[in-house]
Amino acid sequence: MIIRQHTSYSVFYRELETMWLLGGILSTLRDPDMLQARLLIREVQKM
Image (cartoon, rainbow, N blue to C red):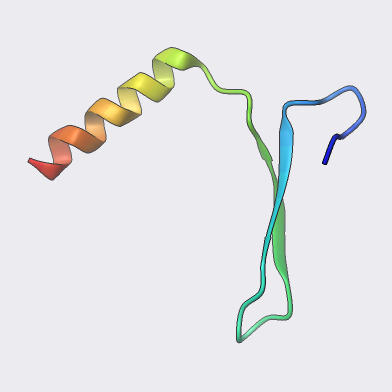
């Protein structure tokens, strides 16, 4: 789904047993350095 003038957002939804519908809007624009840092943190935590 495209939101006018803000093409870096996405809509998610999920059907749950306790709720008919759960949804939200997320920003898909991410800083590459922040993504790399989060991946490194995950790898270290798995060790």
